Image (cartoon, rainbow, N blue to C red; front, side):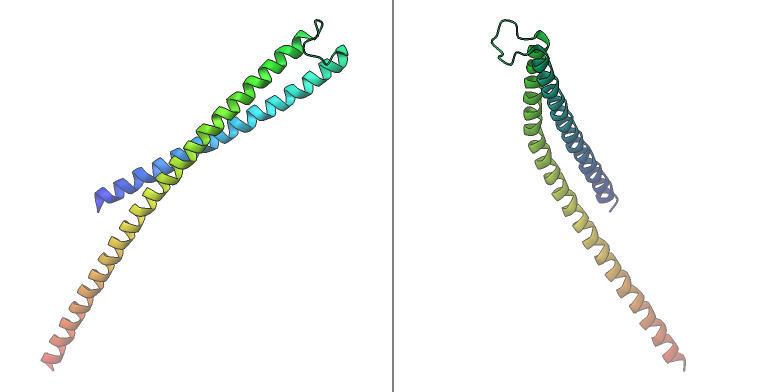
Length: 136
């Protein structure tokens, strides 16, 4: 029983750790997408300020070019993280299934122990009742 309790604690820890990883990846993805959207706004403002919207124009603002490059890098990173997120979610689901199996085994063993104890208690009560009946 002790080893199963230890295994159950380990599985719960692994599930919690994988949940943290999923949450962290989701947070990073949303943050990257938010930053990319902010860069879009900044690029639009810079293009409007300069009056040049053609990226190939020789006088296109340097800040706008750099912001577009950074935006693309952020979106590429977010897409890479989405791939990792899918794998992390799959790992979380697998760890959760393993934990549930251990919990079910543990509950089954506890139920068997309770049934065995109830049988022992009943046998003891029957024995006591038999002794009392014999003494009358």
